[in-house]
Length: 172
Length: 172
DNA sequence: CTCTCTGCAAATCTTTTGCAGTCCT
DNA sequence: AGGACTGCAAAAGATTTGCAGAGAG
Figure (cartoon, chains in turn cyan, red, yellow, brown):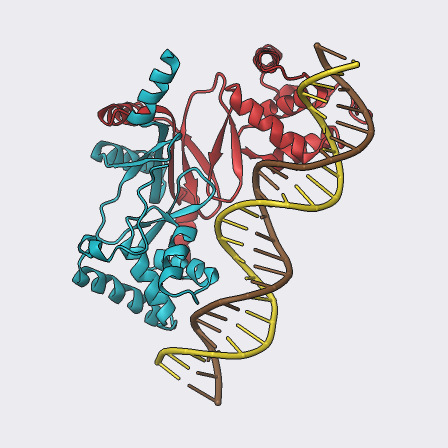
């Protein structure tokens, strides 16, 4: 499986992290949300946000938990789940179900909305965005007097690599 | 064989059934699939297919299990789950996840493909179909050398009724 | 007869919840 | 100080699996 997964220790890759200023902005949003909700700012919550921001997105709670444990072994899964819900609440993350049982978390702040092509063999993900589809969706919702809040479009099938393998395997 | 309590004739429900000829066709497909897979034709499997065909679709395994139990209390959940998988395999049903935890089963044979508007308040479902979106999806898949097998487009939000209620509630 | 089925109970797997101690503010 | 937070263990909810007896072909 070639799921591009973020490694726990990749200090040499730090430059791929969305810039300290950016992360600062997202922390502000998070902490503002906490304050406005009468919730408290804790080191666990901050760490979980940091780790989430450092991933490519598409990470499951378990993936994130493992990354977090590597940084602070005392943080519990429960807190990860609870904090991810908070990130969704304040618009920093969105949940997506990609086919296996678990919920994936994607970046939402300053990241363009996108949909997914999902390879059912290797699990590989391709993101895409189509103005045409987005517009058509709004149009359809309007037709039904429906007020859309969000949507999820997933196209399942075989990615180019797996498709090629399947063909060459059949030729044997 | 546990037929004991189930009556052979279910006359009072017959009018809601999609036409005997149609159901016959679907049974043929199912039994052919069983034969070709070296599996056996059992009364439970037949009953589960019948009940599935009599629903509107969008039923969960649990919903179907309850309907089935009403016709034959001896059938177990396990068999329902296993049989639904078979129906998916042979192309009579498709699985869809509509937001709550459970898997829903929709008719696939002789039913036009469609996508869903899902009300996050009342759970109401609206089916729609858009040629434009379907075509655009194929086009996008092709761009990425991706061979699509199926897709799922769900638009979440408030249906007209729930939206109206929310507005009037806010006005108080 | 043999190999598949079935239903039960137990097991999985992911996510949630009850609780008692701990930490922000 | 006081309510919010945390981590653990247990619970929950949906689906799957091991197994021994029953059934289809």
